[in-house]
Image (cartoon, rainbow, N blue to C red; front, side):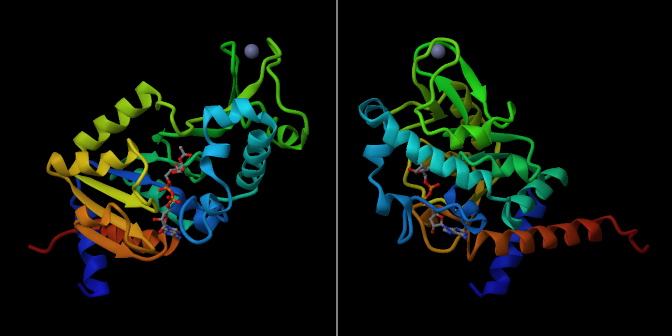
Amino acid sequence: MRVERVFERAADLISGSRFCVALTGAGISAESGVPTFRGSNGLWKRYRPEELATPEAFFRDPELVWEFYKWRMEMVLNARPNPAHRALAELERMGILRAVITQNVDDLHREAGSRNVVELHGNIFRVRCTSCPYREDLKESGRAGEFVEETDVPRCPECGSLLRPDVVWFGEALREETIGKAFHLAQEADLMLVVGTSGVVYPAAYLPRVVKEHGGRIIEVNVEESAITPIADVFVQGKAGEVLPVLVNRVEAAKAGENLPQRE
Ligand code: OAD
Ligand code: ZN
């Protein structure tokens, strides 16, 4: 399909959608300067996930794992949402997008103004105790800055045990409530925008399949083909921060046209 036709088709699907949801991955934050996991510059090229993102790794070497997470926390603290995050927030304000389901832990969707955000893999600004119910949202408590500066391994203020990042590691189950909500949204969706994910980590990668099984369509936005591309109805190749604003502008123009007074 010619590029122009691809954009036209994608914009038409979005304008005509009754229940649209988005599934996002690390690629949507790439233009905010947050590195992705896979690909030539991906984090998992430089680090081994099993040494940094598993419960075993954490209990073996909490200093190392905390060093990695504080480094990422600091990076994300300095990152700003990009036009792709903002375009999804705008689509929600227009009443078209019902939710953003994200694999990202960087909080940039909310920073951009998205309200209904389902964080499948947790949030890097939240920490929790490894032995008591203590939890803290470092953004809410305003302690994120001092937290990343602290060199000692963080300990629970209630019981003194190790604190851990409130993210989902490999080998861990997603929170039941969260994954339930995501599957429910996927079942309801007549359209899913799949943006910047390689589509190889489960259960997140099931969600586009659930949409298809229930008769919904998929628009994928990615700089390159992914594991989702074979089931995408429209594949828009390009950077999320460039593609999404164009699509949303087109949808806005189409909606404005609909509202013009019609001639008799
Ligand atoms: P990946 O790093 O696996 O994939 C990023 C995707 O974004 C790739 O398909 C890239 O082609 C694409 N991409 C890169 N830059 C882009 C841009 N500017 N615009 C659009 N697309 C772009 O990231 P995820 O699919 O999110 O999990 O990875 C899934 C999970 O694996 C993560 O949540 C994390 C990771 O290990 C855990 O840590 C549990
Ligand atoms: Zn505790």
